[in-house]
Image (tube, rainbow, N blue to C red):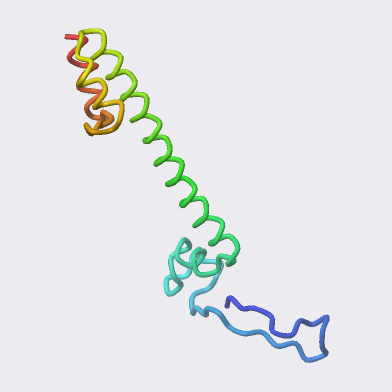
Length: 120
């Protein structure tokens, strides 16, 4: 049985435990068949601060990814402006530099295709 102390033996002469999960199999036979999968059980028993920390890390990673994409777009925009100016397309370069023309960042798949084409 998995349980949690409501009143520990140190607190009182009549300790009380609340059953969280019970199972019929002998615990010496490995993982009991009528008990949840260990990962599910661990997720249910995860402390709140750990769940909150994991959620905050996911949000932080998403923000970092978004910031990285913005910086990549800025870098691509600068390169595009430089190339357009080098071939004498000043008006188009200005439009790109002020954001009038959308600029996309090549995806990993596109970069991989470009590498393969360069090798052939």
